[in-house]
Image (tube, protein in one colour):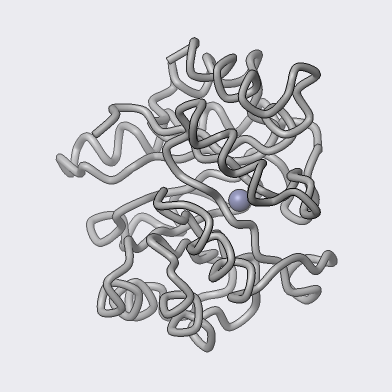
Length: 219
Ligand code: ZN
């Protein structure tokens, strides 16, 4: 297994050519395919649901890293797991019983992830850190692709790194939002081990494969 993960968000992919786009990033060395699910409630935008996860599952063998920006995610975990999700990541802001939701995800055979918005303090997830297989730090406000990176989130990654190390946790520490050749090295230095990128890959001037390679070279 790679020590560092490139998780390619299809949010910026050309859906008319989704099969080709995923094949290109897979061939270029992407590790996971990241699926950004938005419901029009937790975030204003609406994107994709289990149907797209199922489509991705038929296209690629790569793990499907599903990020649920939705209210009441516990209602949909089974549908996403059945569609072929490998990991399900839920927002602390949407889960009154986060520990219970993480247990539900594990019972479905998926990697259980927790994500926090830029303004949510690390203390909010402290109690569930020992149970998380993945912690995702959102480095933009959730809702749209192509947003400006929030530099203050680098300190948040360092803080979570220290807490995970103190727990001797092997959880992935993932970052999502505005990750490109400028910001990736800063997040890596802060202790991140998995890097979600959408625009930097699918909008790379030389194509998606070159986008993956430009990030992979920095790891
Ligand atoms: Zn995401």
